[in-house]
Length: 132
Image (cartoon, rainbow, N blue to C red; front, side, top):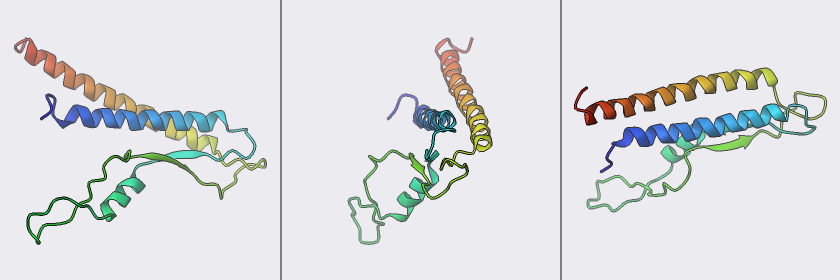
């Protein structure tokens, strides 16, 4: 049992996702004029869909129980690129407007996560102080 429950752990994983996404978007923006550079993106839904469609395996005590796979070592998100597209004359596929929009959305998401985790720690601090 975790002292903080799963909330802090989930927020930490969400911050990891937002940080990787920010790093990937920044890398795309930095390489907007690099010939033959292919933009990358962080995907989560694809990994989740793959996990949901895969068969899980666990110890079954009854034949009516569902099989579950215990392979949870994979990171829940990854970066991918689409090498089949080209938007610029130099073979580059970075859409700077799209990247700037994604960066702004990700910054808002990240700040929301930081505010939420600060609220959790503030609540814990209030409890430790006895409600004062």
